[in-house]
Image (tube, rainbow, N blue to C red; front, side, top):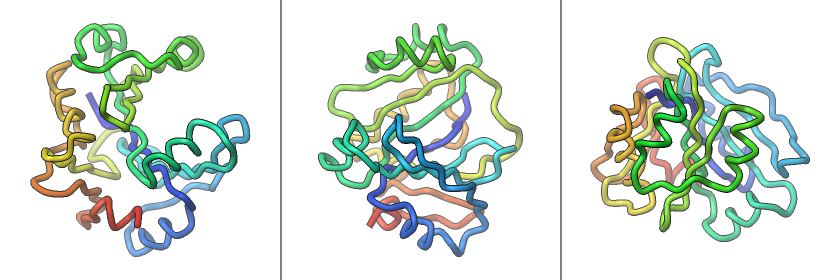
Amino acid sequence: MILDHIALLVAEIEPVLKRLADLDLPAGEIETFPGEGTREVYLGDPKRPALLLLLQPISEGPYARALAKRGPSLHHVAIQVPDLNAFAGQVKGWLLHPHSLESQRKANTLWFARPGVGTLLEVTSGKGGSGEGSVQVGVSLSDPELAPLLGLASAGGPVAGLEAAEDEAWIQVAGARRLLSELLA
C-alpha cells in the first residue's frame, strides 16, 4: 500500500501556501470545482507518490459542513492498493461510505469512514508513482481522530509514507517537518 495523497481542509488556500513557501514543493494550479463546492490545489511532484491536496470550501455542501464542524483539519488520506476488493474485505473498523457506490463505478475508488474519526479514507487500485513520496505524514498515536489510520497496516502491510508520530501529527516535505496544527493555524 502506498500513500497517494493527503487532503487538508482549509478556510483559505493562499495562507497555507505561504506557510509552505520555503519548502521545495511545487504547486499545481488552483482549480475550482463548482460541483464539488471546492477550490483545490495539489502540491508535490505528480510523478511521485504522496502529494498534498489543499481543499477550500466555496459553497454549501459536505466540505463547508466539515469545516464548520471541525475547523481546518486533515480531511482525508488517500492510499493506493494492489487489489481494491481484497482491501475492502480485510480492512477492520472502517465502514464503506455511501459515496462509494458512485465513486467505484466512475473512478474505481472506495471511500471509508470510521465512527468517531472525522478523517475519511480514500482507496484506489493502482501502483502509484515510484521513489520516495513528496510528503510523509506522521500520525499521532494519542490522537483518537488519527490513530486508527495506522491500523490500516493490518489490511495488507504498512502504508508507505504514513508513520506513527510520538506527540503531534506532522507533515514532512524534503526533510522539513511541519506540525499539522501550525499549517492549519
